[in-house]
Image (tube, rainbow, N blue to C red):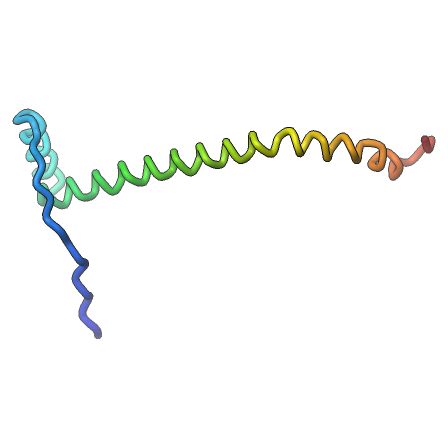
Length: 90
């Protein structure tokens, strides 16, 4: 079995209010995780939320950009669609 390659890691020093540091310590203790693991997981979760929001905003903008064109195409084919319906032909 090939040993797992350690991830490239970098150190980050941050300053937190004492109250947040205490809450963080308590939460990590309750979950049985190191503070650094809890912080890393929290950052990863927040980044996923941000990336999802950016993606959704881009998709919404693209949809809105295409809306007028889609309406025009739909209008172009409204009579062609009716040609295939049974009954009176136009």
